[in-house]
Image (cartoon, helix red, strand yellow):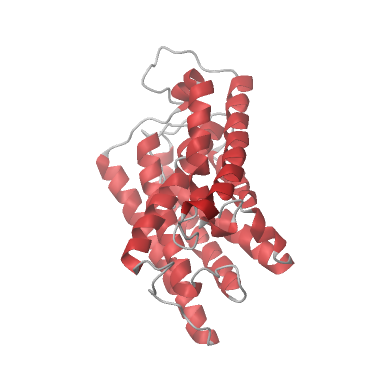
Length: 292
């Protein structure tokens, strides 16, 4: 979700997507110990938090309107860099294996479909309730087209960390659903400012972020780069849909309520599609950690 409100601000898995236990390019490397895996995850979380503080301090001096691009969205990327530098061998073993271009394409179509459905749901809710829609307005003095590009960069900056590194590493030590949930909870709590705006907003924000984590977490498949690509597209479309609804005030009421309800619906739809018979047939090829 957009970095403005933070300490800043979905798909079947194929039989070849054994990323939770599949070694990286060097298949002769020994599987890392649990202590090393959790150590690497700890470095990622702590360095992401530290980078968030620094980027928040830099933002006012950057000349970049945070409404257009919140620099703290790149904190997860810096967290990945720090983790790679300190636990390179551990990360290399746990990076997911690649899947076919066809599977990536199917995942992109699925995530776009989910996000368009989300946008339609929140738009219909606004129209029915009489809530004004912001629409494609200029942001921070920039044309809407430029805003779209900056938001894609920001979404990628976050997904390099959340679905690119954290979730696959967690999948090596727990079920995929548990890994998605843990990643989603961390992602939600990282947006600390959303939890200072009252109970209703805090609950709706947490629920919607967890639902988005399910959508992005299940649809993002394949290697590190493939997962980042798929999740970034979904993250970007979610942010844009929210902006078209409420501009930079997505956590205001009633918009945040619309967001939470719509997010839960598309997450439920994604998990339902994943559980259809053809999806269960393909799960047979997964490793134990990919099943739930």
